[in-house]
Structures are given as structure tokens and as C-alpha cells.
Length: 408
Image (cartoon, rainbow, N blue to C red):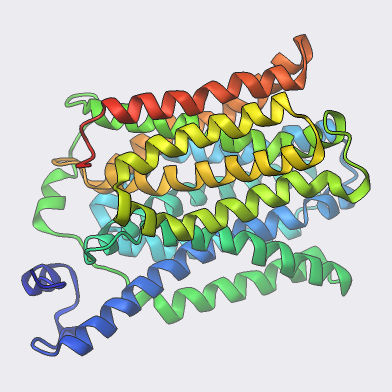
């Protein structure tokens, strides 16, 4: 079976780019498609990391209290929620290529708007737009990832999400450099916008044009009229993963400070090792899926997530907790890439709409997870709240073992 199906390529790619009969040229072009998709994932992650790296400076500039900042930060997920009901249909109707291009440009263009904010209202509106366009960008870019995966026999979806994680490190590093040079938030964000724009303008022509007759007919697909339960369960699995991921983002530093009693700068050790492990795991995910199969990797990932969280609860000391947070990072790294790829390949459902459904359910993990942790911690202790979230890893393994979406 050849690596490339020429008829398939002719349906979804610009015909002028295809040199039929020249295998080397085709492989080179496929590599460029994969590279372009990875760069768009990178641009999306870099935009978010750039904003996150200057939150303390924006807090100081606008003289915000912790309560003010917490309330304003909620505008970002609200923007995402506003876009969710129709983002999938728009991606399906107009094609993921067009929405990916404009989505990333508009998403990154929100950075200068954030830098221009001089009041709470202006910052809230900018964050609302940031979340709104971020949702379109997320659905469209992941749809491109699904289409690109279909061109390759070996799994590559994990490397795309690895690019997003890598962008997080790069964005934080660039932010640190900008702060050290005492560059203003606005100038930093303008530079970041230019960098992301360069990615778009140098790579957009290699995105997959996949607006076929079939996808046009499916544009009118309604989940409520014709529900697909596999998408619901895939969303629940992602929910469990993102709740576990959310606890690491929001509470790892607090856990290391209050429970582990880590000294000084070592407070950030848990979060850092988690991020490094998650990024590394996403680049290894494709190899593991190819060797052991998606189903087995997901089941083991769920076990690793729970084991890591319970290790942190039972042995709240520096070295065991560092290892525990690495385990959680590696466990969650595999789940989203595999689930998104599975959702994008559900029969009779457009990838954009399928990803919107799964993302909408899983996104609740980020919204609900951190407050639940705080509520349980308030009533009992932070260790008990970590133990509660540890159950979610077990749920992932059980649900995956019962689903028939995966071939292995």
C-alpha cells in the first residue's frame, strides 16, 4: 500500500502543487504540509504564552487586586464559550484552511489590544475577543491536524500538540527577555504579533484545502437531531484529562508551597517538571501510539495520571512530588492528541463540528476543575482535593476500555 493516495491528494490539495509520478517531490511536499500545520499550532500556543508571560506586568500597570485580576481573567473563557455554539459550523462551511489563516491572525492581533488596555473594561473586552477568536483558531487548527494526519500512515497528531507545548516555553522565554530589556507590554505584544503573522504568511499556502462536496453536505449536521454518543464519551474523557491538567496549571505552585513546603525558588519545580514532561510526552506520543495502539496508550495514560496524583498525596515531599508531577504531565500529554484525532475521524460528522462538541465538553474541565479543588481544599485540605481529581485518571482508563471508537 503506497504512502500517498494520489486521488485523495487531488481532492484536497491544489492540483498545481502535485507532481504525479515523482515520489520524492510528493514526500517533500507532504513534509512541508506537516511542517506548516505544526507551525500554526506553534503560533497559537505562542500567542497564549505571550499574553500569560506579561500578566503580572498588566496587573501592576492597571493597579489590579488579586480579586480584580481573577474576575477579569474569566472574560477569556467567556469569549470561548460564546464562540463554541457556531465555530464548528463556520469551520465546516467555509473550510478549515480559511478559518485557520484568519483565525490565527485575529487571535494574535488581540495581543496588541491587550497591551493597549488602560482600564478594566478595555482589558475585559480585549480578553473576550482573545477567547472568542482563540476558539475559532483552536477548532480550525485541530481540524487541519486531523486532515494532515490522514496523509500519513504513522501517527503524527501528538507532534502537533507538542508544538503547542513547545510554544509555551518559547513564549515564556521571549517574555523573560523582553522584561529583562524593560520593553513595554505593548511593544512586546506587537513584536509577538509580527512573529506570528510571519508564520501565517510563509506557511498558509501549504495548509490543506479540504472543502469537499461531502463536507458541504454535512454543514447542516445537527448534533441534537442526530446525536453521536461516541463524541459525548470522547468529550468526557477529555474533560477528565483537562481537569487533571487544570489542577497542575492552577494549583501545582500552591501545593509545592503549602503542602510540600518547598524552599524559595523550588516552589515552581512542580509546575516546571509537569510542563517539561507534558511537552516531551506529546512528542513521544506518536511513537507510542504506532507501537502499542491508541487504546492501550490511553488506558495506561489514565493509570499514570491517577498514580501520579496519589503519589503526591501519599508522599508530600520534594523528590516524590516532583516525580509525581512528571507522571501526571506524561499521562495527560497523550490524551488530547489521541482523542481529538479520534473525534475528527468519526463517520458522518464533519471534523470541525466533532471537535467543537468534544472541546465544549472537555473545556468544562478547565472551568469546573480549579473551583472544585478550591472548594474541597477549603472544607478539608489541598491533599484531599488532589485525591479527588486522581479518580479522573481511573475514569479515563475505564471509559477508553469500553469504547469501540479505537481499532486497538
